[in-house]
Image: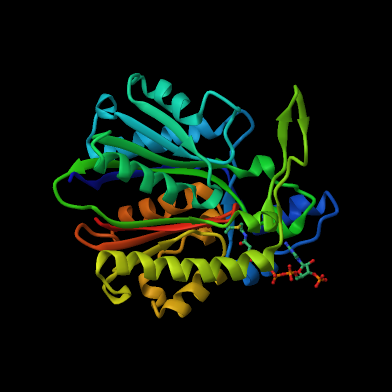
Length: 324
Ligand code: ACO
């Protein structure tokens, strides 16, 4: 059977970074009280990137895709599959993936979006790997891209300090040896009410609440539980132990979730990639942004075993274990 390998990665962050102090000053003008100290202590976040008005998820996704293609040395017209993970598309349809394909000027291959919120990239990567293994595609662009700043209630301090905008991408190519060693995807729809956005278009009208709402403590507990189960499941499926994994690249929601996960699994902090301090939570973009940052700064090396993990609204979660 054909396997898939990560041939390159890329990412894009909007140029405007906003520190906690800058955000706190801006929120104070709206009567919302927060501080750098509270945000760092409870989340580890120090800054986030925010897209300017007029810049959309498609723009971020296209820039990340171009960077990944350049890194892989792959021409855009070799791509026969584009999967974009996003919960903040610029429009209902066409999909972000089709808009990215148009920007790259490469019509013909399949292009579709995956909506699994902060698990989106892991869902998209596992899907692209399965399509390559089945012989339905040879060269995929897998992208996570979000503009979460557009769905935040900037008067709700318990959520608006947590998120940022950005995009990350990988080129996944057919190969004789993996590559992707194991993947698992899970969901529990009965947990839908701990993190949600009920905004919708219905009969020509915008309905529901356009903003993200969250029960932070419930999300925290569930995330640590399901991610630790999913990590063990991925290693077992590949016939490996967690000790053999060189790097964990977990979803970047909160440094305390990442630390609790490491403790639960017995994985030391030196083997866990953390970018939430710089990017905040970029939902589906967080894992490919972290992966790309760590590849570019030389921590992730060819031949190493990397466990990528997503968890998010739905509730959804999953893991992809890869040999680089
Ligand atoms: N600045 C200052 N004070 C704040 C802020 C803020 N930004 N936000 C909340 N507070 C206050 C609350 O009002 C509360 O005040 P009170 O005691 O006077 O009522 C106090 O801080 C404690 O609030 P809690 O909600 O109990 O704080 P907690 O320690 O649980 O931290 C947090 C909140 C950071 C959201 C935490 O629950 C968490 O990290 N949860 C995980 C959720 C997460 O990361 N979600 C991301 C999306 S989901 C995903 O990606 C998987």
